[in-house]
Every structure is written in structure tokens, then in C-alpha cells.
Amino acid sequence: MADLFARLPAELRHTIFSALSHEKSSLSNALVVNRSWNAQTVGFIWSEVTLREIWHIRNSQNAHNYLSFVRSLVFGLSDNRYHDDIIQACTQLRIPRLEKISFMPGIILRNDSIDYIVPYLQPSLLTFCSIGGKLSLKLLSALKDTCTRLEDLRFKMPLDSITDEVNADDFYCWLQEIPSLRALSFFNKGNVESSTVDAIMSQLFSKSTLERLLTRPFRRLCLEYRVDEPEEFDTSSICHSLRELSVIVRADVITALQDLGRLQMLQLRIDGDYPEDVLSPICSLAELKSLSIIFTTAGTLNTEQVMSLKHLDRLEKLEIRTSEKAARGFEGYVLKNVIPIKLLPSFDENDFDELASSLPKLRNVCLLFDWDPDGRRVLLSAASFWPNIESLYLGYNIDLYESILVSEKPLFPCLKNMSKIRFLFTDVTGNCDYNDSFLTTHIEKIVGNLSHALPVLKDIEISGDPSGQLTIPIMVHNLWFPGDSTWSWNNHRLDWCWEFEGYL
Image (cartoon, rainbow, N blue to C red; front, side, top):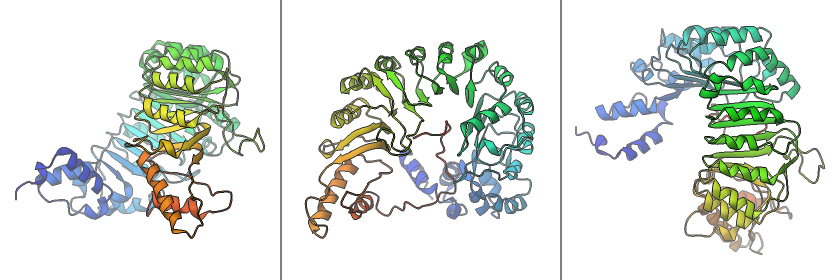
């Protein structure tokens, strides 16, 4: 038979593979169309799999063939129920090319053991990620003894679930016995008080532990740990190797970061007051592609400091905000809204244009400032200067005008998330009664304009109007996302953020 599939353009073959990648369980035993189809399709579809998908092929004669293609294995909620069947069917389970294991449940598991993952650890493993679950000595020992090439460790869990069996000395000794390690992330996940987080992180990462870690040639070090002394960063090894850093600091420690000239990602949670030159030391890090500054308290920044960021012209992500949420009745902000940062002297549309035009590579922007700009002008500027923007957060006073959405080409062709929009300025009801057929036609037109301007937007939140017409938001949602269910459940949540809690 002629190999017609091999004659298709590469991008078309990739599209076909992508469409099939969610149907592994039903296609696994029927993938042999011809030699080219089988080789390319199996390799593409089985590069990343879940434990449930392995369970579906456990009795297949080709099971070990499929497993030989697996590079990434994802565990989800209650996957341990499939564990015994898989081990029994695939005796001496081998995934020879496995490079990454991730435990990514749809919810946070506080005290559940994930030791059942141990039999799946392979010598070829390079990366291990775990969200939730229980950190046990058995799991740590297995990672050390089995995964001799391990380079990347990522943990994010409710830190109050860590038992006394894991202490700072044992944890550091364990890290020391993994000489191949080049990246480490350790964050809290869940509703745990900051004082408890600090105490537990001090239990795992003592000052001496951090000092010794900083002498190793790490490329990424992301810890929910408070660094109190600038001297802790004064090591030549880490200065030359480090590319990604996330830590908690006081403002006076930031000056020490100037020596980390090769940083490409920097995320800081800053405790205490805002000094006048808090951002100046960061502006010397010319290779930065991602910058997140999260202040733990609401305060005031100097506008000149914000404008100094325009020298970081390689930035693809820029985030400046607080993590402090409003108490009831605080200056008119809604309960639980994050309090915006005040800027003095004022930050206006001209300042925004100057900053935006200097940072053309930005794809993700969060500038949660207390300003009241002309929303129409700001959004047009953002669309002009940031053509590849994917997420946009510009404070609580941005208004979305329908007049800027009606154009020949999409306003934000790549935008997936846009939050904190105050109003959509348009006549949604068309001054007509609900039963009037004109209402449906008018809403269809509005939704058409929105979906054209924002073609890849994944979600939108629409509030009812003051008259209580809750039906109108429902109509808008149904028109924009036909057949979408807001209550769909995901057993494997793959979009967890590896950062501090309290992100927007």
C-alpha cells in the first residue's frame, strides 16, 4: 500500500497527531495503518501519558512497545487504584526512556501517601514534580537510589503536612547525595499561615543549608524561603550558573542580586516597606526575560522606579503587584480583592505608552496599580506595542469599549486571559424588552465583536445588570462558549503554577 500519510505536509501530520493525542485509550490497539503512520503516531501520542492510559493497554501484546516511547508520565487523583493491575500485568515494569514524572492531582491532597509512585522511578529520570501528597523518607530514598541522573526537583505541597521524619539535616544530606541536581523548587500550596510556612521551611532549609546550596552550580533555585542577609548570594558558583531565582527577601537584600548578571527569571516576594530605589538594582540584570515583584503589603512606589524597567527590553513577562487582600470596607475595594499599588507622582497613559513601547517582547503583563486611565487608549496601546500578549492585568479601572473591538483584524489575536476589566461599554440590551427578538440578535452581534477581537480567550466572567437580568450573562456565555460546561472535572490539572501562593 502506498504510504500516503508520509506525503502529507509535516504541519498537517502534526495537526492530526494533536487531534488524536486525547484518544489514546481507544486508539492504542489500532494504530498500525502502515509503517510510517505507526512509527510517527505512536511516538508522538505516547511521549506524555497518564497512568490511566497505561492501565488501558496493560493487557495489550504491544504494551512494552508503547511504553518504550514514553518520556513523561503524569499521575493524577486516585491513580493508586490502577497501580496493582498495572504492576501485575506489566511484570518488571520498564519505561526505559522515561525522563519526567509528575504528580498533578485535580485537588490538593494533604496527607495522602504517594509512595505507590516508587516502582515507576527509572534510572533515566531527569525531572520529578509533585503537587500535594506526602513527602516521605521512602520516596526521597527511592529518588536518590534509583534516579542517578536526576537534575530537576519540584515540590509544591501544604507544608504543614510534612512530618518530623524529614528535618533540615536529613534533607540536606539527601540533596548532597544527588550530585547531578541542577534545579530545585519548593513552595507551599494551600491555606497555611505564613508564620507556619516560615517555621517549616526553616526546618527543611536552615541558614547553613542554604549557604551550602548556594555553592553548587544550580541553574534554578526557587524556594519559599526568606533570605535575610545579602552575603548569602555572594558565591561565585551560583553567580555564574544561576538562571532562575525565586525567594522571599527584605528590600535591603535586593542590592545583592546585581551580581547575578545571568539571571533570566527572577521572582521576589518582598517583605516590609518600599524603599525609594527598590527596583533600581534589578534594572542591571539585562538578560531578564521574566520578572515578578510581589510586595506582601500595600504601599507606594515611585513612578520613576517603574519607568526604569524599560531598560529590560528582553522581558517576556512582567508582574508588579501586592499580595495583600482588602479587608471588608477597605477604601471601597471588594472583599478579597488584592490592593493595588499607589504610584507617586501620577502614572498616566503617556507613561504607560513609553513603558510599553520599550518592552515589545512582553507576552504576560500584570501591573496592578491604583490608576484611572483612559481604558480605550491603554488597550489600543497594549494591542499596538504587544502584538503577542497572552495575559493582561492592568488594575481595576480599565474599561472595555465595544468601539475598539470592531476592526478588520483581531485586537488581541493571542490573548488568553484578561482580568480586572471594570466595564464593557456597550448597549447589551439594545433598549428592548427581553422577549423582543431584537435582543438576541443584538447580543449575538456584541458577542461576535468580542470573539473576533479576542479569538483565543479561554474564559470570561460576566455579571448581571442592576435590574437582575441574569439571563443576559448566560446568553453571552452560551454564545461565546457553545457546548462548554463550567463544571467539567479534570483529574490531572496540568496548569499548576510553580510560584508563591496568592497569584491572580
